[in-house]
Length: 233
Image 1 (cartoon, rainbow, N blue to C red):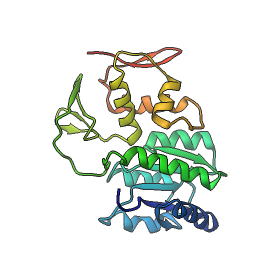
Image 2 (cartoon, rainbow, N blue to C red):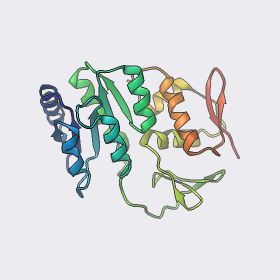
Image 3 (spheres, helix red, strand yellow):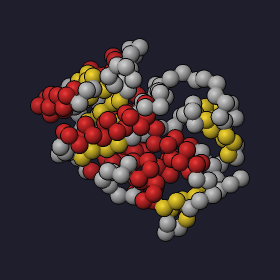
C-alpha cells in the first residue's frame, strides 16, 4: 500500500512504550501510542482506525481483555497481545477472545517488529481490509449450511454474516483448500502462524475450538493423535 501501516500501541510502562514505538517507527510503521486503556476509549469512535492493535494485558484502569472485547465489537482488525503475567493462561484467554498473536514479556523489541510486519503483510498484501464494508463477491463456496468467500474474507450462515477473527478465517480457508485431507498440527501451525512461530501446537486446538463454537455444523473432524480434516459434504 502507498501509505505506512498504522499501528495503535497500548502499554502503561512508559519506557517500554517509547522503546517499542521507536522500533516500530524505524521499521517504517506509523505508530500512535497510548499509555493506558482509558485513552483508547475515545479513539474507538473515530473514523480512522489502525491496521493493527498491540495491547498490553495488565493495565491499572482498563485491561487488554476488555479493550479487545470493545475492538472486536467494531471490527476484525488484527490484534497482538503482550503480557508479563501467567503466559499460558493469558495466551489461551487471548486466543479465545480473538487475538491473532501473543508475546510474553520480556521479549526483544525486534521480535515484536517481525511479528507485526508478518501479520500486516499476510492480512493486507492482497488488498483486503478486515474492517472493510460488506461487498458482493462471486467466489462463494458452500460447505454444509455455510457460504465462504475467500476474496471477501466472509462466512455466512444463511443471511447472517459470521464474526470471525483473522486466524479463524485463515484456518477455514486452509482447510477448504485441502478439503478431505488429514492435516497434522505442525502443518497447520506453519501455514497459519508462519515458520518462525514459537509456541506449542495447543494454539491449533484452541483455534479449532473457537471455530467449532461459532460454526457448530462445519464438517471439521478430529483425526486423533494427528490433527484435523475438513470432510467433503
